[in-house]
Picture (cartoon, rainbow, N blue to C red):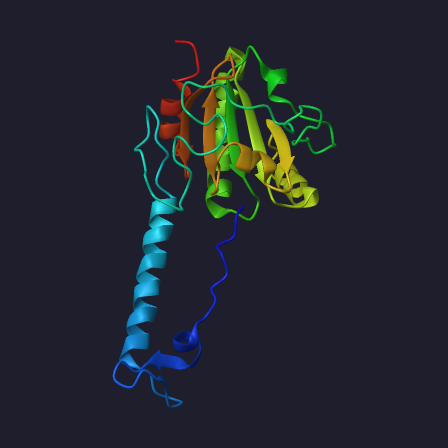
Length: 229
Protein backbone atom coordinates (compact mmCIF):
# COMPACT_ATOMS: atom_id res chain seq x y z
CA UNK A 1 0.00 0.00 0.00
CA UNK A 2 1.14 3.62 -0.41
CA UNK A 3 2.91 5.00 2.64
CA UNK A 4 2.24 8.56 3.69
CA UNK A 5 4.94 10.97 2.53
CA UNK A 6 7.64 11.50 5.16
CA UNK A 7 7.28 14.50 7.42
CA UNK A 8 10.14 16.94 6.87
CA UNK A 9 10.52 19.24 9.88
CA UNK A 10 11.13 22.90 9.32
CA UNK A 11 13.05 25.09 11.76
CA UNK A 12 10.05 25.61 13.98
CA UNK A 13 9.23 21.89 14.06
CA UNK A 14 12.77 20.79 14.82
CA UNK A 15 13.77 23.38 17.39
CA UNK A 16 10.68 25.00 18.75
CA UNK A 17 8.32 27.55 17.27
CA UNK A 18 9.00 30.81 15.55
CA UNK A 19 8.61 33.82 17.82
CA UNK A 20 6.06 36.01 16.06
CA UNK A 21 7.60 39.14 17.62
CA UNK A 22 11.29 38.60 16.97
CA UNK A 23 11.15 36.43 13.85
CA UNK A 24 13.64 34.06 15.52
CA UNK A 25 13.21 30.47 16.54
CA UNK A 26 12.60 30.20 20.25
CA UNK A 27 13.91 27.01 21.82
CA UNK A 28 11.82 25.44 24.57
CA UNK A 29 13.30 24.63 27.91
CA UNK A 30 13.65 20.94 28.65
CA UNK A 31 10.79 19.63 30.74
CA UNK A 32 8.33 22.33 29.60
CA UNK A 33 5.82 22.19 26.75
CA UNK A 34 4.96 25.24 24.70
CA UNK A 35 1.18 25.72 24.43
CA UNK A 36 1.34 25.95 20.66
CA UNK A 37 3.24 22.64 20.47
CA UNK A 38 0.66 21.01 22.71
CA UNK A 39 -2.12 22.34 20.49
CA UNK A 40 -0.43 20.90 17.39
CA UNK A 41 -0.06 17.50 19.08
CA UNK A 42 -3.72 17.45 20.12
CA UNK A 43 -4.78 18.55 16.64
CA UNK A 44 -2.70 15.80 15.00
CA UNK A 45 -4.24 13.21 17.33
CA UNK A 46 -7.78 14.34 16.49
CA UNK A 47 -7.02 14.21 12.74
CA UNK A 48 -5.55 10.72 13.11
CA UNK A 49 -8.70 9.48 14.85
CA UNK A 50 -10.92 11.11 12.22
CA UNK A 51 -8.85 9.55 9.44
CA UNK A 52 -9.10 6.09 10.98
CA UNK A 53 -12.88 6.47 11.21
CA UNK A 54 -13.15 7.62 7.60
CA UNK A 55 -11.00 4.71 6.42
CA UNK A 56 -13.56 2.22 7.66
CA UNK A 57 -16.49 3.84 5.87
CA UNK A 58 -17.81 1.93 2.84
CA UNK A 59 -17.09 2.85 -0.74
CA UNK A 60 -19.99 4.01 -2.85
CA UNK A 61 -22.23 1.30 -4.22
CA UNK A 62 -25.85 0.16 -4.35
CA UNK A 63 -25.63 -1.05 -0.75
CA UNK A 64 -22.95 1.32 0.50
CA UNK A 65 -22.70 4.88 1.75
CA UNK A 66 -20.46 6.84 -0.65
CA UNK A 67 -17.34 8.58 0.59
CA UNK A 68 -15.43 11.51 -0.82
CA UNK A 69 -12.52 11.44 1.60
CA UNK A 70 -9.38 12.77 -0.12
CA UNK A 71 -6.37 10.62 0.61
CA UNK A 72 -8.51 7.90 2.18
CA UNK A 73 -9.90 4.77 0.62
CA UNK A 74 -10.38 5.03 -3.11
CA UNK A 75 -13.56 6.62 -4.38
CA UNK A 76 -15.61 5.29 -7.28
CA UNK A 77 -13.50 6.89 -10.02
CA UNK A 78 -10.03 6.14 -8.62
CA UNK A 79 -8.03 3.37 -10.28
CA UNK A 80 -8.53 1.44 -13.49
CA UNK A 81 -11.95 -0.02 -14.13
CA UNK A 82 -13.34 0.68 -10.66
CA UNK A 83 -16.59 2.34 -11.64
CA UNK A 84 -19.65 0.26 -10.82
CA UNK A 85 -21.02 -1.07 -14.08
CA UNK A 86 -17.58 -1.39 -15.70
CA UNK A 87 -15.59 -4.56 -16.28
CA UNK A 88 -12.90 -5.24 -13.70
CA UNK A 89 -9.37 -5.18 -15.16
CA UNK A 90 -7.43 -8.38 -15.66
CA UNK A 91 -4.84 -9.29 -13.01
CA UNK A 92 -1.95 -8.78 -15.42
CA UNK A 93 0.61 -6.30 -16.66
CA UNK A 94 -0.45 -3.81 -19.32
CA UNK A 95 0.70 -6.09 -22.13
CA UNK A 96 -1.30 -8.96 -20.61
CA UNK A 97 1.68 -11.30 -20.62
CA UNK A 98 2.53 -11.41 -16.93
CA UNK A 99 0.02 -12.34 -14.24
CA UNK A 100 0.08 -10.19 -11.10
CA UNK A 101 -1.67 -12.74 -8.91
CA UNK A 102 -0.76 -16.31 -7.95
CA UNK A 103 -2.24 -18.95 -5.68
CA UNK A 104 -0.37 -20.41 -2.73
CA UNK A 105 1.30 -22.98 -5.01
CA UNK A 106 2.57 -20.32 -7.39
CA UNK A 107 0.01 -20.91 -10.16
CA UNK A 108 -1.21 -17.78 -11.96
CA UNK A 109 -4.74 -16.60 -11.21
CA UNK A 110 -6.52 -14.71 -13.97
CA UNK A 111 -9.90 -13.08 -13.67
CA UNK A 112 -11.07 -14.43 -17.01
CA UNK A 113 -10.68 -17.90 -15.57
CA UNK A 114 -13.84 -17.22 -13.52
CA UNK A 115 -15.91 -15.87 -16.41
CA UNK A 116 -19.46 -17.17 -16.27
CA UNK A 117 -19.51 -17.22 -12.46
CA UNK A 118 -20.16 -14.44 -9.92
CA UNK A 119 -16.99 -13.47 -8.06
CA UNK A 120 -16.62 -11.97 -4.60
CA UNK A 121 -13.12 -10.53 -4.21
CA UNK A 122 -11.88 -10.00 -0.65
CA UNK A 123 -8.64 -8.17 0.14
CA UNK A 124 -7.19 -9.30 3.46
CA UNK A 125 -4.09 -10.14 5.51
CA UNK A 126 -3.51 -12.50 8.42
CA UNK A 127 -2.34 -9.61 10.65
CA UNK A 128 -5.58 -7.66 10.00
CA UNK A 129 -7.95 -8.15 12.95
CA UNK A 130 -11.18 -7.20 11.09
CA UNK A 131 -10.14 -9.55 8.29
CA UNK A 132 -9.78 -12.42 10.73
CA UNK A 133 -13.09 -11.60 12.39
CA UNK A 134 -15.05 -11.71 9.13
CA UNK A 135 -13.31 -14.80 7.72
CA UNK A 136 -15.68 -17.24 9.45
CA UNK A 137 -18.73 -15.45 8.02
CA UNK A 138 -17.14 -15.34 4.55
CA UNK A 139 -16.62 -19.10 4.72
CA UNK A 140 -20.23 -19.63 5.78
CA UNK A 141 -21.56 -17.38 2.99
CA UNK A 142 -19.39 -19.19 0.45
CA UNK A 143 -20.73 -22.57 1.56
CA UNK A 144 -24.29 -21.24 1.39
CA UNK A 145 -23.93 -20.00 -2.21
CA UNK A 146 -21.24 -22.09 -3.89
CA UNK A 147 -23.86 -24.34 -5.47
CA UNK A 148 -25.10 -21.20 -7.26
CA UNK A 149 -21.63 -20.85 -8.77
CA UNK A 150 -20.23 -18.23 -6.36
CA UNK A 151 -16.46 -17.82 -6.38
CA UNK A 152 -14.76 -16.26 -3.36
CA UNK A 153 -11.30 -14.97 -4.25
CA UNK A 154 -9.51 -13.85 -1.10
CA UNK A 155 -6.39 -11.86 -2.01
CA UNK A 156 -3.74 -11.69 0.69
CA UNK A 157 -1.91 -8.35 0.44
CA UNK A 158 1.74 -7.58 1.22
CA UNK A 159 2.41 -10.64 3.32
CA UNK A 160 4.76 -13.63 3.04
CA UNK A 161 3.12 -16.68 1.48
CA UNK A 162 3.96 -18.71 4.60
CA UNK A 163 1.89 -16.37 6.80
CA UNK A 164 -1.12 -16.64 4.51
CA UNK A 165 -0.82 -20.41 4.24
CA UNK A 166 -0.53 -20.84 8.01
CA UNK A 167 -3.70 -18.83 8.57
CA UNK A 168 -5.64 -20.58 5.81
CA UNK A 169 -4.62 -24.03 7.06
CA UNK A 170 -5.34 -23.20 10.70
CA UNK A 171 -8.86 -22.05 9.81
CA UNK A 172 -9.57 -24.66 7.09
CA UNK A 173 -10.53 -21.99 4.56
CA UNK A 174 -11.53 -23.71 1.33
CA UNK A 175 -12.22 -20.79 -1.00
CA UNK A 176 -9.65 -19.53 -3.51
CA UNK A 177 -6.64 -17.71 -2.05
CA UNK A 178 -4.50 -15.34 -4.09
CA UNK A 179 -1.19 -13.77 -3.10
CA UNK A 180 -0.47 -10.10 -3.85
CA UNK A 181 2.88 -9.53 -2.10
CA UNK A 182 3.56 -6.14 -3.71
CA UNK A 183 -0.06 -4.94 -3.56
CA UNK A 184 -0.11 -4.68 -7.37
CA UNK A 185 -3.62 -6.10 -7.72
CA UNK A 186 -4.83 -4.00 -4.79
CA UNK A 187 -3.53 -0.87 -6.48
CA UNK A 188 -4.95 -1.97 -9.84
CA UNK A 189 -8.41 -2.18 -8.26
CA UNK A 190 -8.01 1.03 -6.24
CA UNK A 191 -7.88 -0.67 -2.83
CA UNK A 192 -5.95 1.22 -0.14
CA UNK A 193 -7.16 -0.39 3.08
CA UNK A 194 -8.06 -3.76 4.55
CA UNK A 195 -10.44 -5.46 4.50
CA UNK A 196 -12.05 -4.48 1.19
CA UNK A 197 -14.63 -6.22 -0.99
CA UNK A 198 -15.59 -6.14 -4.67
CA UNK A 199 -18.57 -7.98 -6.14
CA UNK A 200 -18.42 -8.97 -9.82
CA UNK A 201 -21.23 -10.54 -11.81
CA UNK A 202 -20.77 -13.53 -14.12
CA UNK A 203 -19.58 -11.23 -16.92
CA UNK A 204 -16.84 -9.70 -14.77
CA UNK A 205 -18.71 -6.43 -14.27
CA UNK A 206 -18.34 -4.67 -10.91
CA UNK A 207 -21.79 -4.50 -9.33
CA UNK A 208 -20.90 -3.43 -5.79
CA UNK A 209 -18.00 -2.78 -3.43
CA UNK A 210 -17.39 -2.16 0.24
CA UNK A 211 -14.42 -1.02 2.34
CA UNK A 212 -14.27 -2.34 5.88
CA UNK A 213 -15.48 -5.36 7.81
CA UNK A 214 -18.73 -6.98 6.71
CA UNK A 215 -21.23 -8.62 9.02
CA UNK A 216 -22.98 -11.78 7.83
CA UNK A 217 -26.13 -9.70 7.16
CA UNK A 218 -24.24 -7.18 5.03
CA UNK A 219 -22.57 -10.00 3.13
CA UNK A 220 -25.95 -11.35 2.09
CA UNK A 221 -27.10 -7.85 1.09
CA UNK A 222 -24.09 -7.33 -1.16
CA UNK A 223 -24.28 -10.82 -2.65
CA UNK A 224 -27.78 -10.09 -3.93
CA UNK A 225 -26.16 -7.74 -6.48
CA UNK A 226 -24.33 -10.61 -8.22
CA UNK A 227 -26.38 -13.74 -7.50
CA UNK A 228 -29.37 -14.66 -9.59
CA UNK A 229 -32.68 -14.42 -7.69
